[in-house]
Amino acid sequence: MPSGAEIIAVDWGTTNRRAYAVAGDGTVIDDVSDGLGILAVEPGGFSAAIADLRARLGSAPMLLAGMIGSNRGWVEAPYRSCPAGLDELAEGLKRIPHVDAAIVPGLSFADESSVDIMRGEEIQLLGAVAAGLVSPDASACHPGTHAKWVKLESGRIAAFRTVMTGEMFALLKKHSIIGGQLQAASAPGPSFTAGVRRSLERCELTADLFQIRARGLIGGLSNEEASAYASGLLIGADIRAGLSFVGKGGAVALIGDPVLTALYAAALRETGRASFEVDGEAAFLAGIKALVEVIR
Image (cartoon, rainbow, N blue to C red; front, side):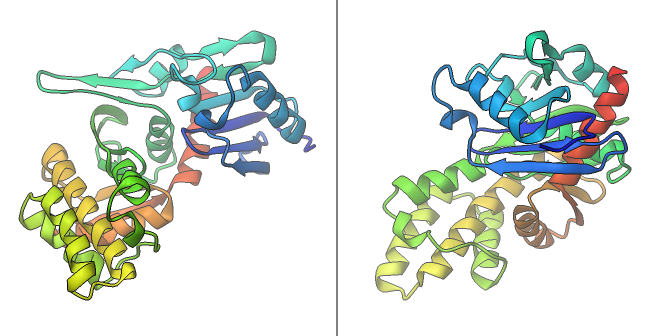
């Protein structure tokens, strides 16, 4: 068990869990990363899962973000309305005194045409701003299971839009007729680029996805090419929707898993829009540090 941690920071999502024992100067003393997302925890099992983290990372106060605070998680932390920044997150913390823990609330956004929610990405977005990695007035994208396109204004999250790109790819991979063709890892390259261009040029996603099966049977499309092409189609459609939402402007900040941000950066190049990548883990830790400073 590590000693000297000031806080245990937990990023607890739907399918994965990452936890860090963090010293007062921001140094990560120890960490845990596993597949125990909220959907993998048995009913009534969150207390045991928390105790397991404490046994591995120590007894420091715990600050948790992500789907752990949803209505399917441990204890629900109600959404805070946008525009919102670190102050609103601090005000909305759901404290659980008997285990010396607090859960970060998610954010909601609504206007005349849409309603949206996020949990977990807000810490990374605001952390990237706090650490000086992203401009306080940038357009940002957080790729993932549910990709978020975000408008930042004066260092706060003003508005956002969700695109279910990662979940759609996972569903196609596991449950569709083309699933067997999508098992290879996706990477930037000619097939990926072709898929991106197709979605950017014309909005026929569901028809184009079926073409993958036909081309695999009679067109000579390999499984490696099929996976990359499908990824390109989905990410191209994602970017089409995202850029329509954030509008024109400077470079898009891509915050998250480097594997995913690299795909989005390659796709954005096809639009002529500049982008830059920010590591999601570094942004999360910066966000936790900044939130702790506000709480004090």
